[in-house]
Image (cartoon, rainbow, N blue to C red; front, side):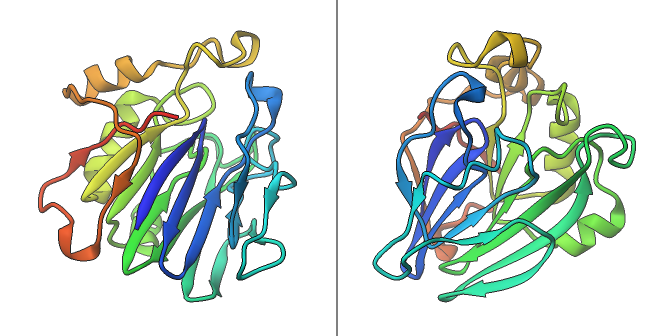
Length: 218
């Protein structure tokens, strides 16, 4: 199974059973979504920096991607997706609405995408999510959990790999995302220095016993 970073909160997960793209965005973020194809597209919430499904084309398996945009259980072509309802803020969704955390089981590896999680996960939510192999975690704050809460969330879920997302980059529109924390601020809070990689390739058998931080470039 292979993961590449498309930018912002969007990743491409490619396995033997098919391909998943998470949270595709539009130019609102300050740069354009790269072209991509997928069998499944997950949308954590209905904001334009996470729900731009139109540019995602289908594959040889499917003419158009299957869109998952609500909590629940789904299975498409051997890939399972489990959505858990959370909130986009720390006030029960009153400020920014709901957010769905998706666990995607692909090639036996469970990838958890937290979307724009805006609060500490409850014990009930942690139990519903269950064990995680790879965690795709927002770290920028403002619209999501910040670096300190991200570290706490990582410790609660104990994934084999953690990949940060939704942080400020030079490409982001500063009018909208200028107050986000940077990747460097998260790395300082996490207490790690890493060399960015183009992709993460792994199998269930090759998962590390201790949590490893991976930074993907796009």
